[in-house]
Length: 482
Image (cartoon, rainbow, N blue to C red; front, side, top):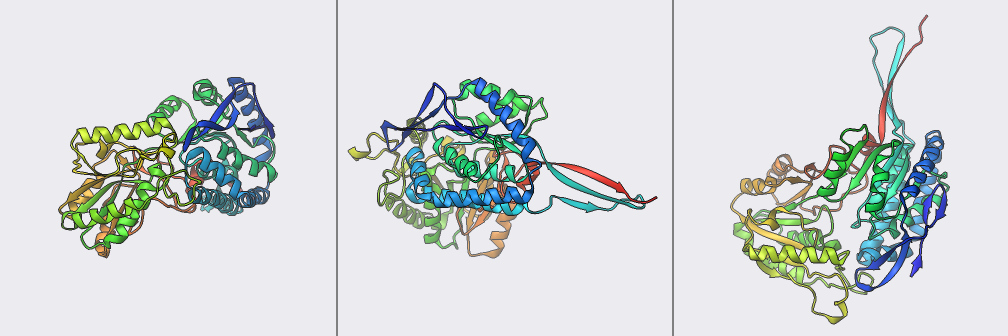
């Protein structure tokens, strides 16, 4: 088992207490341990961030870009080791973990380019001999709380624009998956990031949540995770001037119309529903199919699901790994059992693998449910596991109504050969991300990303839209006449 230190004030530090990190493919042996920081350590992290911000906000955008570009290069250079650690702590396949590492580097490179651009606009002024503009400035210290399902790419998604804009950051990674965040921090540190600009707080939420959220130097909080935690954080900050960004839950739907390429639709649903064992906020979990092709599509979907190979993420040939923890596995199994009690039919999966070699891991077989109606919990509640529920409908209008019949509004897809139906779906589906003839997942670094309704806050992530969250606007008028 490896012992890892965390980054604080430009140095790698440890404490007397530790948190063990386990491989969800076999929980018997811990693979690493990280420091369990205390409240006092959190305060020191803020001290370091305050000092780092004073330096970083005055650092040339070109130097910021140089450091971020070098950090991206280091991630690519270290991709094999990083991917192995991501797979080991989270359960992703080697291919998924490798892709995540490359995408994290993409975020750094993209925002290195954005850092070189000016943030502002020249505006007209009614006063003579006066030139007015507005400019964007960094906020200060940003706290990023990131989840276990994308332990490298989510810190990259948040920290790349945060740092490009000139902020300092404190990163609190998920307790289950801290290794990836430490790899990201090390790349930035080794690239020359000034001391204190990024500080990583590893620890138990029960011990450090309060000092993380109550420090008066906190300017903004960006959070990705569950609705329950996100709403609690929003409420706690409601009486303050701390800016909040939340990327929360989803119950994403894919619609398959009668004229669709059914084979392509089935492949896309399996890719979106079962990649990362369904542990994606953009995973397809509801499938709405026109009744005339329902049986044909279902047969194709079940064949695609049956071709998946469940196993350890690093094992040759694995196409779907375990869930992140025993707690998550048990939660998904419980959701499936409740769905069956409420009337759903298991068409595939619904259980754990029988292979003795997988008995110590957190596995759930890819699951397809039929006989699902809108009143079932499985149709409305986020499962965050390898489970998709099928439902037939009789028309395009009924399909759109079914998509929108949700408290969430993150992602939706439609499969059709009808251009008019595609555009109507894009206009009428109440989701922040709309896909036509492709998966609900897979949005690139420059695509603005975020949901509507209970799926998140108004601030988008990714692309230039992210800078709206990480900057404040100042208007400047200069009179140059006599």
